[in-house]
Length: 264
Image 1 (cartoon, rainbow, N blue to C red):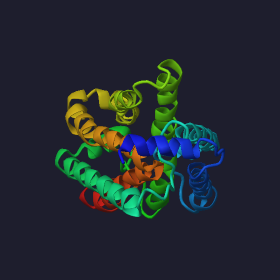
Image 2 (spheres, rainbow, N blue to C red):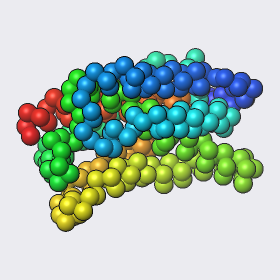
Image 3 (cartoon, rainbow, N blue to C red):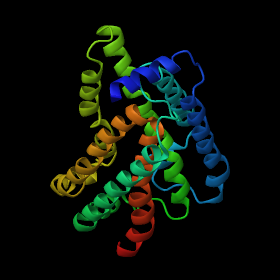
Image 4 (tube, helix red, strand yellow):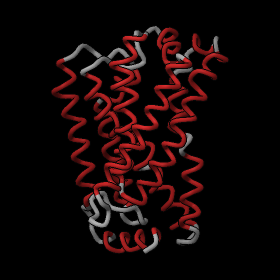
């Protein structure tokens, strides 16, 4: 059975359900994010990195929870595989995605070890590290993934696909439209992260920033975004989520929290 036929069957099967497995799993993840804010964060000093601290404001959590729910509700009706669909194996949903993310995280870490881009960013932004300290990083990056996924995948791709292919094109060129969306909008996340690092002091050394941070970020995060969007549609949003988790485990926790403080 082709991917398109599976997705059409998934759409027909789940179109009548208001509260699908995707919504259920998503609300559990949002609840975990809220639990980290309420229980874990008060046990540690305030987060030093402003961009990371902002993720854990109640406004952001509520907005992310809402738009993620809307995106997944539309995803169930536009051919995205539901989160816990029995036709998807645990190998497809968890193991392969987390290994892909871990491989990309390893590549990103090796590139940074050579270019020292995050060391340059930390020095110019006036912080000790680009990363939060261990063991808080375990909770920050496993729960903060919820916000990133809501903004850059769960809402963005289903809503744009529905608007363009279902509303404007009347269900024509569905897969072609989705691939155009993937290739274009997978740039948003790495560019958004890079823009947050472009402080006046960093921009005084733009050449160094471009070589040590801009190019490595695009080289790793853009293809990761493409893979995540593809797996979201084919195997459900948990597959996309696990790519991000594998990446964060290596990039932020193993390298950023444990190795970087030693070599930096």
